[in-house]
Image (tube, rainbow, N blue to C red; front, side):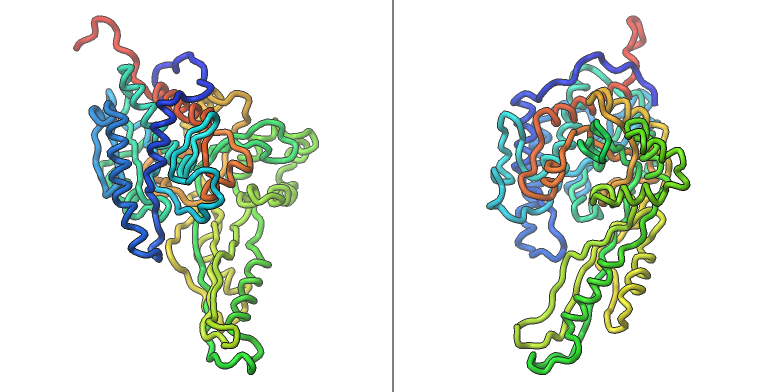
Length: 469
């Protein structure tokens, strides 16, 4: 990727009130994606809210909508910004418009769809995941257009509307359109990695994790049928008891720890900021692999990097305390490490449950982990931009523990990066899909600045005086 030199300017401390308000207004649109099991009544308001959000985008970013080509896929929006050399594609920038439902309204400091702006934060569901990235990209493109900047090669913006329910109607269709058009970009950029404080013992600076792939996804249903009857005459084990035992066996026998090439690269890149005793250990990385995996497994945030994780999430069965249940079931969610597969997860469940009366099957969406590719050629550019926007950080690689829209575009770019240059604490991370989601004015400024600097990197050289019109 080539382009003119980035502007020499400093990162703004915070965004001004007008910029903050544009994001806040987007957060007021209740663009909630519901699982198919949710009632039809709950999905009706969201359709109108997506229309409302689209109108807000078109009103707030007039240059974007005057100069970029826009194709709609339902409520998803695919923008094409033709470059000076339009047949080459420098970047596909992803974000999503939808958000997850809110669980407990009473625990929120401000109502989750009020879009409150105070002296420090912009509050609301989607403030981090993922409307801040969407609006920040548009802020950066609008600013570049106003400055007369044009990319050297074509840039696409792909804003899905159903990422939180796996992207089948949005990202899948947009990716297929790009595939049919023969698009292959230098860079695919999406959500996933951030900059974290206190990521590991002994590392004394924030760490930017630029993810280069993601884990797979599968939900396994365990189910049991029984005769039923009166609770005064139970057999040796009820359907509920049998399901509880199966869940316990799966949870007590997790899939093995394993150091993948991506995580090995992640650790190596952090070696220079580790305490001396750990640097010495890494000199013998082959011998130290079990030690490294145990260190990473000590925290949930890093254990996900070295294991296919197991999370029992739903269990149900029975109708009354004095009636033996005829049906019982449980759902167990797995995030699959590269090197494992959906089928190996099923095989593991069958092996550890060891009960022929427990039915084991997949339900809902599944996806295989992304190929364990090394960082692509544009990785260093993204790393350099991160360091310029948030100085003093360490930069490394990683894999996204969850599922993102970018898995649908994996074959469409030479470099895949899942990253946003926002500096978060553990408490901040817990607000994503949780209570009191918010983004600081400082972090939102970083997001906009990062995207504007990226556009500058991808921009065509300025025209010289006397050039042909």
